[in-house]
Image (tube, rainbow, N blue to C red; front, side, top):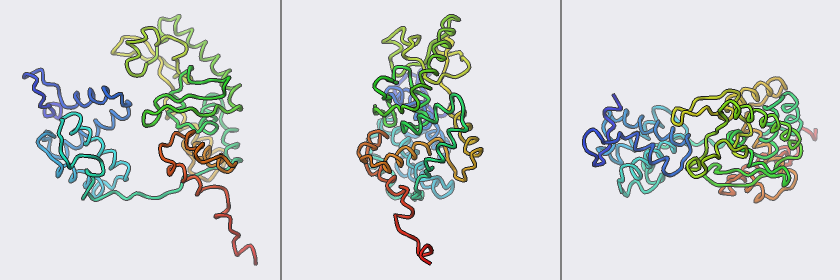
Length: 341
């Protein structure tokens, strides 16, 4: 029913008018946003339309947007980040898809003016000690261990590690180049010496798998942006293959090709959760915890905070400064009065 109602007012004649969600997807892909951003925007726009009784967004205005965002905080009790994401999706809809130049929609801050805001908890990140990291890595084996080693040794986000291409790893210079990371920004981080041998051995196995796929008429991977049109054979090129390919091929319905995607993040999340449990660590440690450990342990070793900021890819040093509050200094370096009794 929703698909029948969501028809954009674009001037296309009768049956040729694109549906709203089609226009949203087109606008997102034109700006080269990630697939996850596209899925999130589509989700929030559909939810907004349903919330307003399936009325077309062009018939609604800033008041309707604020009522919806307020309901998310009051009724659904979403987090501040979730509320901001919903606001960003609706801001994109009105400004980029419907071309509505409304002063109240000048930015997320303006959209959220007068809205009941979701509470923003101020939590410090969970950090493992060096010994705890060793224990977790000792439990892991094979590909999950190598991925975890890169999360901790290079400060990568989980998807950044899983989306690495062969060409992004420079073993000679001991660096990893992250292409179009969070925020669409490239950066360079360190390739740990402890991972070089394991990674070289792993890539030998990946190369054998890729050659086998080529021999079977497969071997292509998805390419970012318009590279598939610009570099016609790049999808089969070894340099563009995933460092951590999935175990199974899939059939791409758009191209008709048999392709191999990278490992799914849930595989790594489950593996790390089991490793933390088996190592007997009583902390809620996740894959992202290893990135927190990377930053905290670098600062403990005396690294400059600006260097850590660049390695992590933070746009604002204030984001990096949170790790100065979790340094291993035993309660800000003070001695408990109980120890003086």
